[in-house]
Image (cartoon, rainbow, N blue to C red; front, top):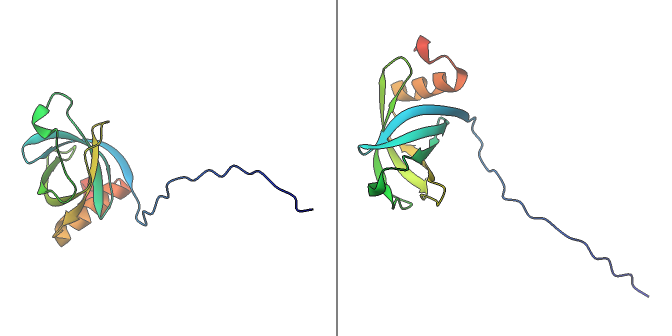
Length: 119
């Protein structure tokens, strides 16, 4: 007689990121609206909206904009971005960098290594 086995299977979301990410807490603006940069990699970023900014209630996938990041030494890093993770109920969203220059790539790479002051 065949044996019936009852098994519970848990399916977890896969983290398909292939690049190194660094958790941050940097001041930034997306098209003039205050956001907080929560993590960054050489290909993209994660951010959170300012809870008091009601104008950013909708940030759809595919939205193109400009992300201005202020580094701790006062320099500004302007980046063209495309939203890849829509604004969620927790206020978090994410995106990829578009047309990243060599200079900006090197600065992001230095941020990942904790050496932004050397670039």
